[in-house]
Image 1 (cartoon, rainbow, N blue to C red):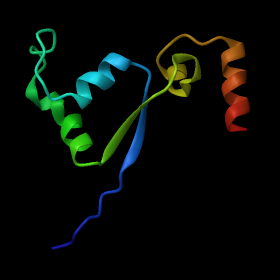
Image 2: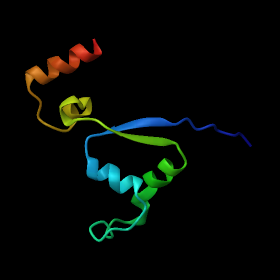
Image 3: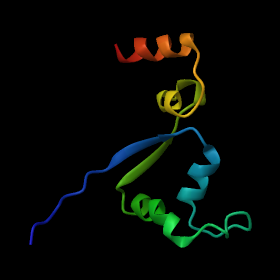
Length: 82
C-alpha cells in the first residue's frame, strides 16, 4: 500500500463570510440548508491541509475568470506576475 503524503496549502478567499462559515463548525440558522457533503472544506481545515486567508477583492487575481475586468485591471495583474 502506497502512502501519499498530503501537503498543506493556502487558499486565498475574498469572502469573509465564507471563511467564517468554513472555519466554524457550528450550525447557524442561515447555513443549516447547506448539504453536509459541502462541508468537506471544514475537515481539510481541521486536518491542516487547507489554510484559508483573506485577500481583498481588488487584489484577487482569480476575479479575472469570474467577473468583468477592465483593461487597467488586466494590466495591473500582468505587472504583478510579469
